[in-house]
Length: 329
Image (cartoon, rainbow, N blue to C red; front, side):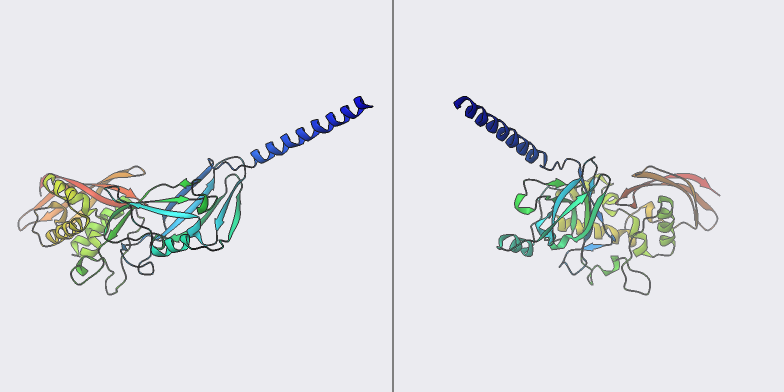
């Protein structure tokens, strides 16, 4: 009798251990693997950005979470996205921008955070748009490097996070009476000109035509002034040693010098006519060769301009150039 009772108890213990083991394995298997999640950001409706309040010239960023794996990807997303994401911005000196008071207050105040669970099958993605200025204080014009942190288990579990790619964010000086001549605006309107996603040859063509017509606002639209300014080694050393505000002044002064012919610079010479000879480019960099004629009283000077271009966030810009003299006609 005792032996039978012992066998029954042993059988119960064995099945209990087996059930516990299965439950433990099931719980282990439910831990989400986020290594297959890809986080990417890009500017939405890119325009000219200025410092200021979130409502004044917002910086909208398009955020995408993709499932690159073979299993279902699940994560939580707060109705108020401030509990799911963080924008981080760095200066060229690797200083970070501060969070807004609104963001800090929300995260330090006791409240119920509502969220929903998102499921992405392999190959699927989920996107939404946020205003960077709701998250970061942007105190002054400068160039910043912007990235995003996403918390798939919400901000309270921020040790679990995903990192995005980096974007280059250029904040321009706010329009004012002193700088209004440099603000690109459309003729006969107060609308800001926006650089378009056009090919390198079209960028060069529009830039030359703008110079022929003395439309400085359109001329500077596709030119990387910062790079051209640093083509001179002395200017380059000074530019890299000064503050962000001083850099802004140097860029504006360089523009003014170009416009008023205080710099002997071939980039602002006005051709009588031109012809695009050759265009070659990869996904990020390229060259556009242009034959340009400069009319004098008794002859025309012929030159070959090679414009060096590169792409940032879908926009091609001229960042350098060279000139070869081809004689006269």
